[in-house]
Length: 312
Image (tube, rainbow, N blue to C red; front, side, top):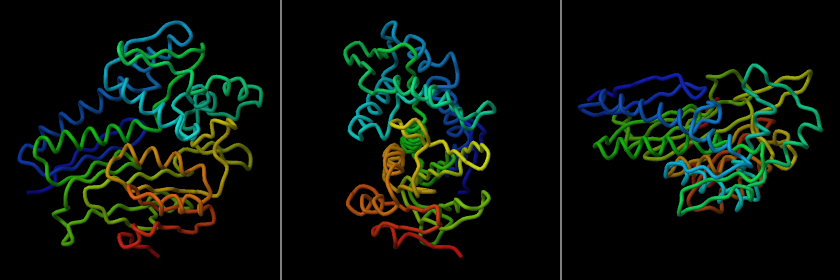
């Protein structure tokens, strides 16, 4: 049975869904509707989304939200607090101030950044589990789920496909790849996921990761960039300084079972040095990974090494 594929342009990226199933087109149609629904409800860039209804009532009143959105906000807040705000879903005001990746992107003044930093405290997200309400205590606060949403969407799509009997497939949400079962095209049964060379044009790969029923999430300083004079600013922010994270990591890939975990750990470990990130990866049983430094050095965690093919 051939792989049936659907390619979509949404969420600021190219999404590719490929599955093997006797009713593949029907399932892909439903998967597309799921993604459109998620985008409409969870987006921080659409004024009428369910998330933006929460943001619009910041400092005014709690807003009741659907269970799935409430649970993702809760998970994001709790993960963020445990990571000392390296992951910060309250970072919305800072993201919109810089607006990297959009036509009106600019480098803000120090004063503007200071003003927004006062609005990015996770503790100011008040959750009421019984009523399923979210309240942002300060006016001007905004939740942005960009650091978690694609991972959550990918996990939901995989779950849907598997409940419908899909045993082989691949979900690619642009830098966020989730494989289902074995690849029937590869004698080893593995999916081969290319890792972009962060120093070169898109399409130039530095390595291939062999994956089977796993998530491969890559985040890099090359994805969305603002150039100002001689300086380049990427889109991964430090919610303590108000500026993009400034260290030696150019690209970070996390291999895990759940895509949401991959999103979480790429964000957390991007704040570390390449060596420290590698130490973390070698100590955690549930994740593996690869770090590429700004000087193009490659660091691969011990458990992942047998599954990585380095390219010339």
